[in-house]
Length: 375
Image 1 (cartoon, rainbow, N blue to C red):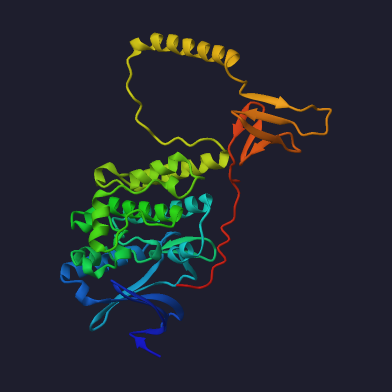
Image 2: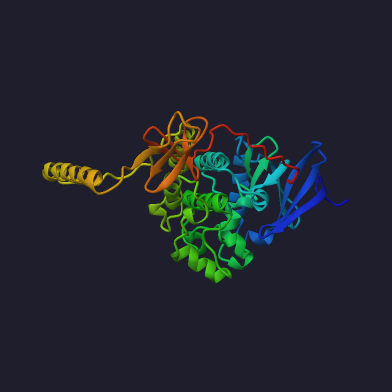
């Protein structure tokens, strides 16, 4: 069995643009770890290497429930090794390939990713390679971000875009593919891409090859969520639109504000009330208010007259309480048959009193991932 330093390699899990990832046993501490093997060729400057060691040491000094703990970073003759917690579960990529997530699940995952980003950004640490593959959902339903601490490598080698597969490129921010200055807002753009994909199971920026994906990242707006799903509130579209702004200055400026909007949306959905995302109030001329009120009163009077003499009532009941036939309500020519509980329904809509209520998801739910070990 292969050994590197004091690590015994148990399984080679994957190989990507940053090197190999293995499940290994730390012989000294007698525990399984996730071992990232990095080639020194990825770090052309001694300064970058020093920053890499500093970031990994910073990450190892604090714990956060949504960041995979880093245990150790060390150097061999031709490799850099980063030892971190081995996680039993599945990557978000594997889960999305297997099933569609419910809205409650999507928001829970997005909130936990944002929590991890906020904690790292507060320490001055960026990720710069966030994707569903770097998000692990554990058997306990916890979200863990892996491969933090490698931003110096990613920045040093970013100009070599040939290292990235087309799939990986679709998670980079516009400033990354342009080799411009990056900061925490680049990670928030990647979060927006992941959130969009959790909802639609499609990336927002597509292309046949790397050049067409870059063109889409820089210039094309993503397709609206409504093309893929009808059960989503408008406020979720607003959050994603702001995360995916091409210019960093137009994006969310930090993870705190993202968390505020995501948690507010989750709370409002649970209470059954419409969520409110901050909007700029339009300016208006107060002198026009009396004229607008008069116009509104005239419009209401006209509607009442037309409804009385030209149109059928919006709702009318047919049938009798004493007959065996069910009561039926008419609305704009559509039939709503009465159920046993006294409600009228048609195609998922319900009529109760004078209100039509849309179908609503229940607020209580269990993650229930039923996950097997992945790493």
